[in-house]
Image (tube, rainbow, N blue to C red; front, side, top):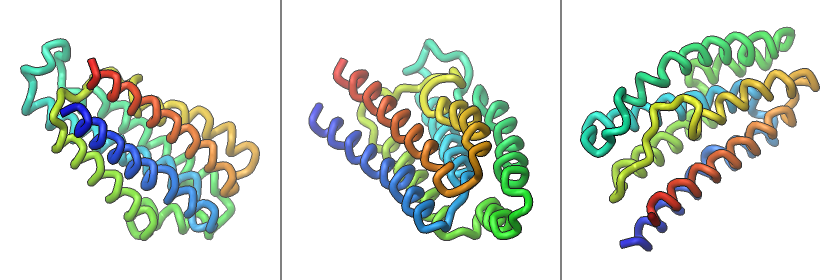
Length: 196
């Protein structure tokens, strides 16, 4: 049974890498993306993944006696605060003076950008199928400072710094590297937990 678990996890990792890093990276290189695109995409991925995790926890609560509250509610407030900051700072302030980039950010915000929708649907479907097909106990935590939430924390902090260099397409690549690294670490944790 172990090889099947590893295969499912590696397939999940490969699909996640494609939709979270390669496709957004291609969009940045083509000049069809903004820093807001990346952070907003990761925010939605975290919100929906947290909701899926929360539903899974609610249906399997007895398997997680160490967790007292639903992990979705534990993260929701922080995600709401980040949403306001991301939309105002990365969606408006950082691109102020460039009508083209503001318009692009507005299209992304309203789900009218094709690349963004392909990325988001791909990430959501991958997360949902991964949790749905899991044959082992999933790693669930209600700590908002663990796992993929760290991508949000680090992106917000480094985002401001990279924007001082100039809000160019290259300013988005540190986010892709952070995302790839944090997802890699998360997958390694899940693999080790499944082996034990």
